[in-house]
Image (cartoon, rainbow, N blue to C red; front, side):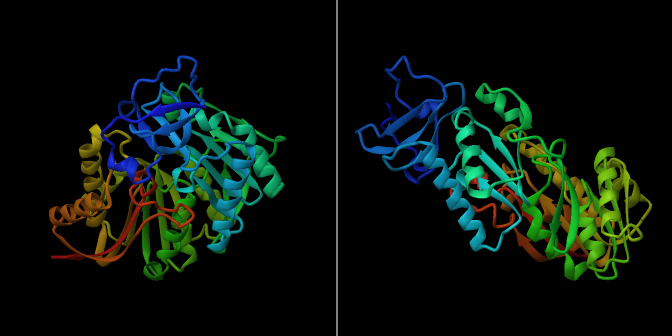
Length: 392
């Protein structure tokens, strides 16, 4: 195995155990036979062992560490890592639906595995982990005897690794519309064409958190996707629930989900641009007891963080204007480049501009099947906030 050496000045990130090593942190590599995706041993400038990882000079993250031990990287290694990840989720009470592997948080950089009942969706987002895909599939088959495995590698970040965008079966073909159960409700999940891996498992706990504030409420949900928050609101006792999304396919699925749960008399979903609708309804002085905002990520680039913050400020300001005095705003951000502090400050600025007084009811992150490692910013990405909104 080729040895690579870090520059003399070590980054605190690396000494703190972060698995990413950037190209400018490495000394020139003498081995001209080293190929993208190969495993390398990483050492400090003074020849102290750091770990073993996979190498890709095409990527800005040149080495992603798999282990800090001198151990064999083999099919057995991946089997043990995935089994350990499953044992952790079972301790937390997960059985059917969960993020089984959350990349760096499970010591498997750039690997995502979501479990939907007996079906699994895989994303291998770096060349080094993509090479081990057969071993990963074999591990899933050994541990779970799954009904099906599907890859959703149609993610643009793969292009940065020199990988093609693709999706398809990694097992015998099966119906890619899965019926999932969550919190006493059922949802259709389209793992072939839905966003990400088909369903946002990271909001499972947050969807339960709205129960106390939606009883007998008039509820509005924007950026509804397939209606999970809104249908939870109806299930928890809301009088009426309106959901909006710009995607016709998402709205169709949301209305199907409402009917599936016999809540179509309470929930109604329609296609429209949330930014335009929130602005127009505020002008019309429409009011709701609870307004829920769950927008997509506003940026994946550090250069656009301010634009993202401006976007969050604008939609939350508009959302607050629609909340009845003493009602609640439920708002999220999944932009990992926006810190919790930046998000909360943005909400405060929006409240000031909307001439509202706000009180925090709840602030939390993603569900605990997406564990957070301090110092690894990409593992702490979701911000979920409930606030009471009052007139000044």
